[in-house]
Image 1 (cartoon, rainbow, N blue to C red):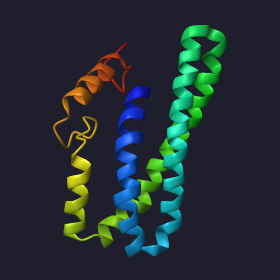
Image 2: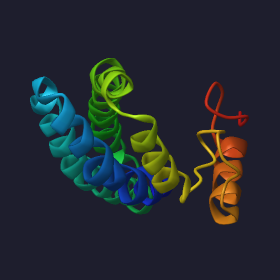
Image 3: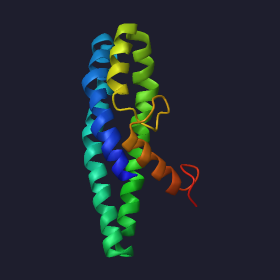
Image 4: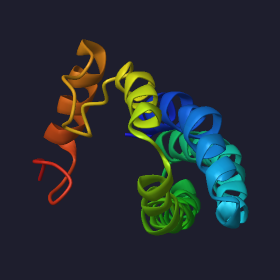
Length: 149
């Protein structure tokens, strides 16, 4: 799952938000520029946080239980950070974008975002390698996230 988070949201999705969506919205709605700046900072922090989680998980796997709590603590912080990030997008950025962007703006964004076809969205048919990865995660992740025990 950490590989997926690094591979898809961090490397493909977030750069498109930063490079395409946020500048358009900031130009048309300058009153939310600070929120956009925070999200951009979050994108930079998120990449580092995921790499740290991967390192901590590997440490736990290789060195045993003495490393477990460090991983759990870092994961708890990351989940809170990510929820706050998504909440800001959903409550401030996206509603504003719906008000200020034109149909042509949305078409341009749709074209850019659909290139990656993330299986998680359910909106586009997934690229095969992500479909397989997402299916694997869903099989092994415990409910309610997945179907594992």
